[in-house]
Length: 250
Image (cartoon, rainbow, N blue to C red; front, side, top):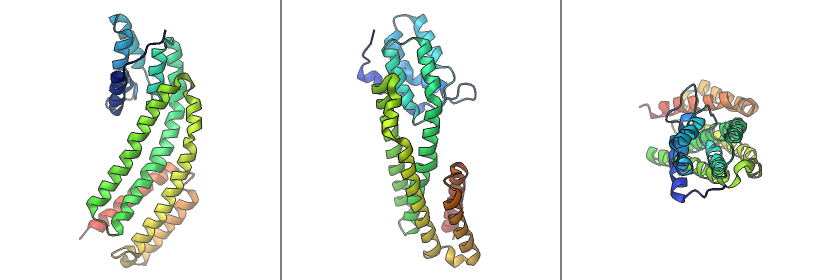
């Protein structure tokens, strides 16, 4: 029997999803946070029996891991499955099936593309002469717009798709968006390098060694960065932090 969950319950589950990493641990990873987000709905569905509610909560306390932003796809879909009266074993199998793909898609899209792209855009603004607070506000505004939007989209997609959420993910073509964002990040990296090299007080004034190293890093990133996005992302963040600290130094 299908139960219609009240909007306030769905809103509570979505808000709680922002804390899904709040109790991260090596044993259950996101499991505790997932159960915390599910709790308002479980109280509606199983609140008539304390024993049944406890059993349902324990099921969702089990190990679960995915990208924290795209875990909302699983959260919405599992809410739908529980409301539709699916068996505990079917719900468990569904969570096991989706956690890997959601982790891989989220890591590539957010950590490997979106975060570097927005960081480089903000730093380029700063090196072009924008005040520091403008660059910081730009970064926080744009990054969080994408981050919150992805969480909301994932939650609604999971809730409407339920067991068939895979088709919705396929139609969304997140891999294509990842490729586009990576291309944008590459363009911004080139622009950032140009501003650092040619801008007033940039690396060009620090001597030819810094200029050669920056050019080598840019060429290397273009050649192998798309294959090694994790090391490339770490290298970009480290390089950006060092260059920014050097730029702030008196």
